Amino acid sequence: MRIAHLILAHNNPQHLELLVKRLSYGEDAIFIHIDKKVDLIAFKHLEAYPNVVFVKNRVKVGWGAYSIVEATLSGFKEILAANLNFDVVNLLSGCDYPLKTPQLYHQFLQSNKGKIFMEFELMHSNWKEALCRIERYHLTNYEFKGKYALQNILNRILPKRRLPGNMVPVGRSQWFTAPAECIKYLVDFMDSTPGFKRFIEHTWAPDEFVFQTILYNSPYRAQMVNDNLRYIDWSEGKPSPKTFTIADKEKLLCCDKLFARKFDAANHSNVIQAIDDQLDNKGEQLSVISA
Image (spheres, rainbow, N blue to C red):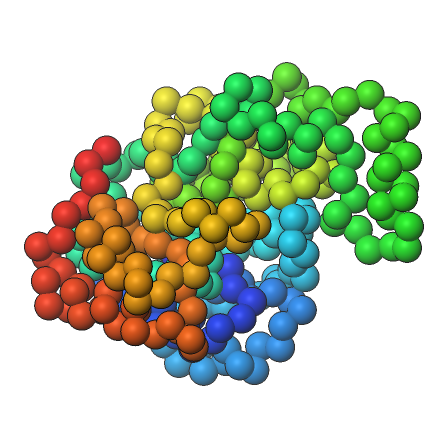
């Protein structure tokens, strides 16, 4: 089992280094996409790690824009171009952290070979609040004066949008773990279906549904498991999930997920240290979910 971790990051180089150290294992590789808006200088020291590769084709990422899909695809393409015969690709953010040792998540993924771990809810029934993301025109990915005024005009005069080919829209969290063959399918689909790509460019926050939708409407649907193996706390009701503190220690240490987000090593390093202590001292005794 050989894993390619793809990390999308834009800040917190201190935490990113902790994440790199914890993910480093065997022949696994860590591909890092740093937002093009950010100076690479603060992250350059990570090149000293032999298993780290910085994604060369960097993208300027905007919140809720198609650009984050572009950044992800850029990372996927570099992983595939490396020709290192990865079995699994694991998509992470720069503020994630493992809750299990590499040995344990390797064991889990080996025993669940071929399965795609991602969250997916049907937009037309279980995730209706997300329908406006695809039914309305969104110009979030563009930078020009008056774009929101134009967006409002388009949505007043034009009918609701529908995905090309009557595809069934599904999605939820953007983070997932999937076999490398599925990553190749995603890249090939986006490259060979320009109409779908144009449609997605005019949606909002497509990173949370585009890859799930492609795979759900493909021969890979039967391999999808509605669990992205991540512990994420949305209890604060904010646009972003809760940042874990030491108060979350017990929940994290008892969690059966493989990864969690989000963390802030600069301000809440003690909760990360608590995870490290448990992984280093009792790593092989931790429980792993069965799927």
